[in-house]
Length: 247
Length: 77
Image 1 (cartoon, rainbow over the protein chains, first blue to last red):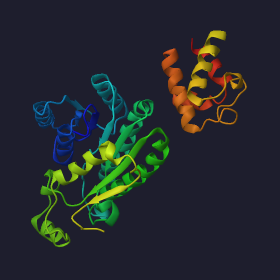
Image 2 (tube, rainbow over the protein chains, first blue to last red):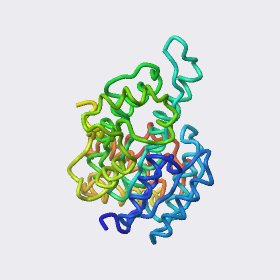
Image 3 (cartoon, each protein chain N blue to C red):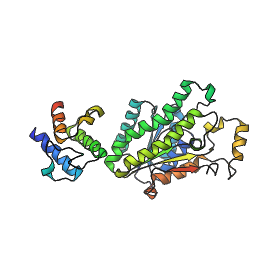
Image 4 (cartoon, rainbow over the protein chains, first blue to last red):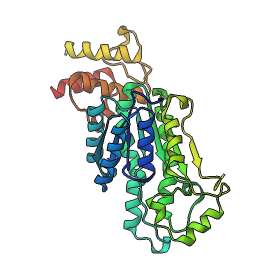
């Protein structure tokens, strides 16, 4: 198990990609703090599954766009595990609308969670990782952060922002042996994508050379690799996992 | 003062790998002791731990010399 003895925090880990990443890190031997903001019951299920794998886990509620809550969360994780080696910034929401109809509030909500949240949690864990002289930060971006997508001006802006933030954080922290990378998932089957209309899904499928939708585990396996010592020489990169949808 | 300076000096020597004789009150972390921005942030973190205090980002930005650090710590006691 490549992550034995490591401590991880995964934001937005109660469902979808975050859930699968939390489980995969645990399968590789890590102890995992399972962050959620709304779905406490779901988060507890993930915790139970991780414990069944023989690793430590606990659920922790936090809105990642709130500085105080973030600081409390990171403090709790470090108290619980005594260290923090892996941060996966996965928490994200969508508030889709055409640009012309998009309300300022829809813009702000998405930017606050999907981009500011990454900044806040990263800032909060940096101290501990700098002291340890080792750390892995993995930010979940999106294929649309690279390609753009009608109806998602807010989400796309945030996800493109995550790529830039990843590169800057990677440069700032490289001398402390902290690597920072992004994963840009394509069309992955989760609650988030289940909400899309069937015709939109069919249209997207046509654009995927590997001719299938991705699964959360396609992302989780890559996250576990980027969290491991095997990826020590990779930093500031964005790994596109999209079945060839965007190359 | 002497005791604070002694403890601050030890941290600087450990962290920046400089000789104790270089750690003078007027020495600038960046210009004289070879620290980069991140080193200064780390030094402040270590001072916080050593003296069991919290140094706000605003105050931390004003600490650029050994003397600044010692004076700040003294003023917070």
